[in-house]
Length: 402
Ligand SMILES: *Cc1c(COP(=O)(O)O)cnc(C)c1O
Image (cartoon, rainbow, N blue to C red; front, side, top):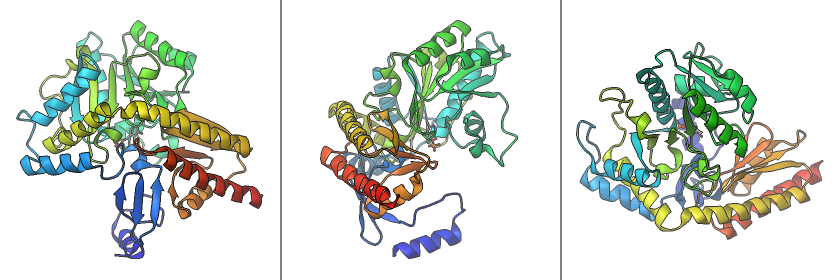
């Protein structure tokens, strides 16, 4: 099929939930993608922080094929070897953790919210159910995770949403402190806000939140769906802060493109769940877990996370040089390979994204003035140089226009 045929078929039969670029991608390898017309792209979106090992990494392909020939699915009425092994690997990295597997970020967060409520109930606080989250946060599209999400634009048309969520400005400890009441059971935050525009938490903020949670006996939940799994140059983003949550969630990068999510909790919290309290038909199936295991083992055995720290620093430095050349860049921010440029108000972010795509570079725009960069974790310096070259050409064009 040609790109045009794929686009027309999609417009006729799919629900119009997505605003798509007029590109149909049909093949990928490493950091590269090809569309149905044969045009090549350098992918600095990685399926929105999903394809951690790049596209069709041999280790991922091999794990899918090998496990698919053995066993694809059995229910959680039985014990599942790849599930146990993946949980054990996460438990080795995060000592004493217990894992619940699901299929997406929203599901992982739903599970975390349910666990936090259950923990309060079984620990002498049946009156507690409220969760405080941050403005500009993103936690998912199910009704409860939408209620948790601190961005009004996503909620419009779906109200009333489940009760029990309060939003406070991010990085404002005083506001958070004042929002805690007798009904509060948890605080849920992204250590680095992703969909909101790449806003890292301040160091003393997360430490302060941890202290508040201890003092009020609240569950501290970190949503690491986007910033976790090596993306920021540490295994988990909260490790930059020396602050440990009670519960954290994973998804996007865990299967490098294969759907899998996980909710991880300290044992004390995890044991609030009893058989029958929570479940997922597909969650933790042999195929998904075999892929997750292959991805994590590759990351850990090939020093990928240390590499992200170095390539991320290099990329950020190059973006900072761009900011010195182009005065309409207001700020460069982020960590590792989770970076963004914020432009001045007179710039047109979506138009810059479109021009980069025409030049063969896929990047992501947030709102009208933020450009987000989420390359695969295996991205190389020459690929970063190539991307910087395209971005600077597009910026020169913008300069000449104005
Ligand atoms: C993408 C994302 C989610 C939602 O994940 P889905 O797999 O789309 O449900 C939740 N939290 C954060 C921080 C995310 O970036």
